[in-house]
Image (cartoon, rainbow, N blue to C red; front, side, top):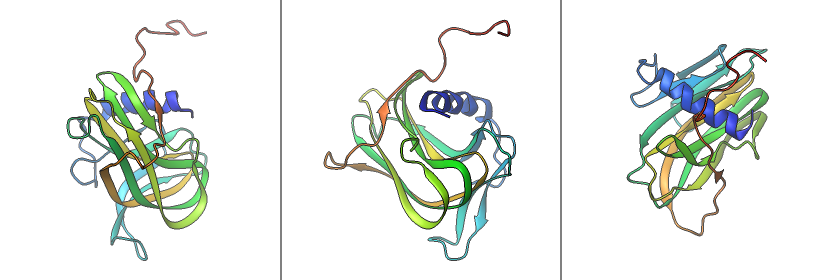
Length: 189
């Protein structure tokens, strides 16, 4: 699933789940995505950087993606370079996973990175992953989290969202609309 598809799906998924109370997730976190065979929860973990971790667990044959995420106002990050980092581990990722962050200006994704160009794959023990974006001065919202596309288990903990200086290289791309401006395929093709 490419950048624009995931960016649009994240926007629509967040709108659809924003009012739902997520089961088993701490305040501020929600699960969304188009994969229907995934569980997103907090689980105990031995040998992890923290006693409990966020976990996305998607059954064999899963198509689409699932994400655990947060959204905050863009005010404190507007006009700054921001790094999202976390400790992650993977078990049998059939496709890929990654951290992701998106800065929105209204309904437009102005900056985005989901590690699509440097995906987490396969199985590995705890390691650091990060995304770094220049947040536009007029950003209204910042969304971030981690995602799993396809089957497997991806866990994350020790998230940090921090302002960094210009010596830290960015990892993201310019944005694309989160929602289409006009309807399409009103009659099946």
